[in-house]
Image 1 (cartoon, rainbow, N blue to C red):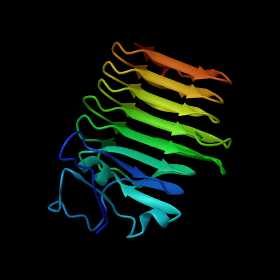
Image 2 (cartoon, one colour):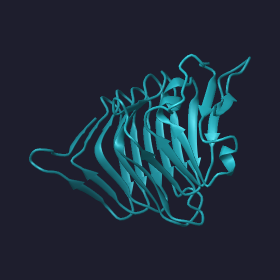
Image 3 (cartoon, helix red, strand yellow):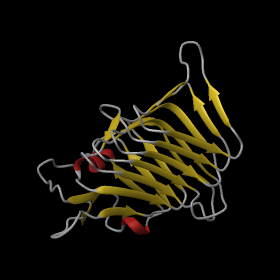
Length: 219
């Protein structure tokens, strides 16, 4: 078994589940000993050992993020990365649930690297990525595809670069990208169906496209 965290409330809204190791790895797929019958929609699980928060590197599985009816805050002191293969290539949260991923980078440079993953929220669920929020070290952000409905997509790094590799798509939600260094949009589509798109970068914004894969920005 992993650690069990109950975020339900008798009165009011569900709480958030917060992780804060030095490095956090999102492992695609499900753990080998997962049991689909042992499920509680108000409970979140992590499978990184009984003392997960003391480990230098913690792991959380895609299946754990997808099966729990809660908002997630995945925070690491240095890096958040992805490993393994997803059965369908998509990490999708439950309806109206939001995902926040943060790296502090107070004493060491690091990154949020989600370049080979599609992250999807539905309903009002939002996606927020924040790097280098707690210090002067570099924190870069790399994403493949992020998709929401009415929820916003927000990416911010105080001291780093943002690289968008495939797409940022919303159905009315806003897209807000801010970088202390530069922003690169590489053969990517950014479409919001009515939401606004804001990009600010101290060292400029670069659109890299080709004839077969042009950069498309539509609001």
